[in-house]
Image (tube, rainbow, N blue to C red; front, top):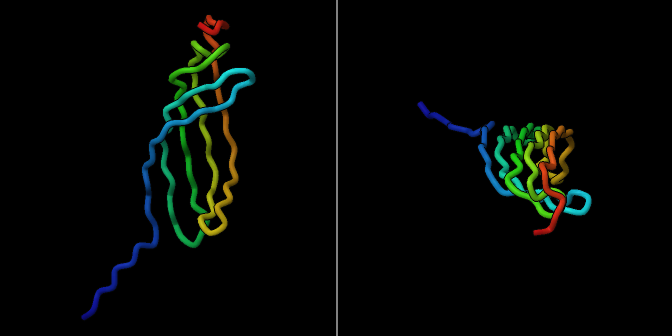
Length: 95
């Protein structure tokens, strides 16, 4: 009897840093999420970026982005949507 094991799908957890240009300032975030790899099909993903810092008018910003979509590992193209809630906080200075 011969057994063949094949990986047909995988759930991968990811974490990273993120920087987003925000109309005169930069938002910095901590990014975490997952991607369900099911080759050769499109791979579904969801990721959340929690804002941890910012510059200029976003120096005291808080909030998050949530993105969902699908990634084609063959072409490198991703399609999806995102929602965000950002509070600029109290500072609009550069100090």
